[in-house]
Length: 431
Image 1 (spheres, one colour):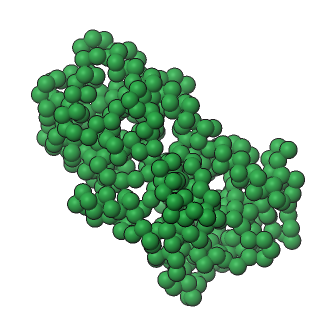
Image 2 (tube, helix red, strand yellow):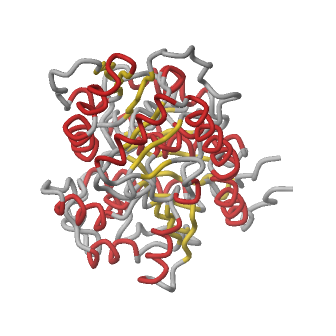
Image 3 (cartoon, helix red, strand yellow):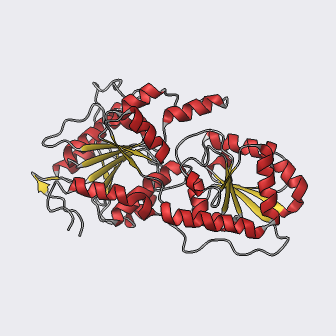
């Protein structure tokens, strides 16, 4: 039985409101997959979930949103697409929404200005007004902000009648660490923020969600008064490993799947400059390199033989079953690399860097291999090409690790239980 939502004075109380500008229904990059995975799992637990999408909808998005919602029982979605008049008519009861994708209000809050305590991104007054009105009208029990750069949407906190919601922040990664590593590699960070600024933004939240244990410990040390949860990315484990045994002498397909982040482009550049030519010279046509994802729109491959560019894909189920070895030669970044989690779940042997292995160190060396130096990368891939049994053993161990530690139940159940406890303050709660 799901947690009930008492109707107090015509207002639904006791739901969990997610706030995001990520196109979670697409699930085409790691941040979108993170949000989508959490929402789907909590809906399956029959928790009352609402999502406020603060970005802009493109052509075809509403249809995709409806498909996503159809798989999530009781999910309510809000967006800002409709104008003020329709929103007010809906709120006054003269116009009933024809679906569960509803319009929020676009009032202009001239007093919002620069938001103290959250200088990570200047927040549009319209977006802030939309979220403030939504929180006042819906009176959620818990508000979850995805991710740190959107903290200005709820700070200062909107005034509410009655008990204030708990405010949770899902970090996804530590932005100041990502910025430091990005600058160290000679690139300009997308969000250039220092530690003090990020901690000031985080400090306004009641509960902080870290995607891996090392980052959780960093937050605990710097903000010891905060409640910090470790909630890794939970993957829908395939029923069985995707790869079929290949005949002796068959081509070993090396795969990389990534979004448009500059760290992915730099990782590919490093691999094709330092590893691929030597590997191809030694192994010839017995190795191929396959690149897929949104990174294909930003990265131009060299004129090397054996490199296949697939572009964006609709589902990871289309990609990993065709791959023998997953690589992630990322040199900078933070957080948990979702492409690595997916590769482990599909039973692909995984080779990555120390940065890429963050949050997955316990799977090494049996379930994944970590290499930093160029020659170590070449040696590992050559060994796997000539010894399929060894490669498969690594893939099988990695898959067992994913089942035990990275399944949706293993990753999300602790968060779900804490949310259930928070909702239990209203109504009968869960029985």
